[in-house]
Amino acid sequence: MKRFVWEPAARSDLRRLDREAALRILHSLTRYGETGQGDVKHLTDRAGIYRLRVGNWRIFFDLDAHDQVRIHGVDSHFVSPVMRSCSRSHRPFAPRIKLEFSL
Image (cartoon, rainbow, N blue to C red; front, side):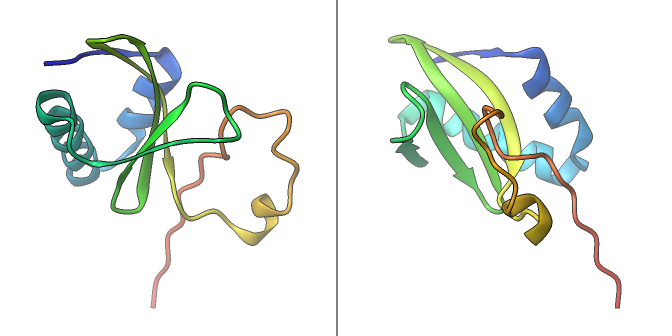
C-alpha cells in the first residue's frame, strides 16, 4: 500500500472539484496505491513526474520512495484554445480551468 502526500496546491485543486469528480479521483488513487493499476504514464518532458488519468482529469505526482507518492496537482485535460497557445515553460503544469457549457 502506497502512502499519499498531498502538496497544498494539489489539495486546493481537489477541493475545487465537484463531489463526484473528487470521489472518482480519490477512488482511482486508492486503487493505484493498493494494486498499482491505473492509466499511469511517466512524463518525458518533466523529470520524475508521472500522470494518472481519471476521465477528463489528470493527477500529477512523483514517487518519493517505494511506498510514498507525492501529489503535485490535479488538472482538467480540457483547456481553452487561448490558454493552449500560451507558453508553458514558466508553469510546472497546465493551467487549471473549469469549463462550463449550457445549451
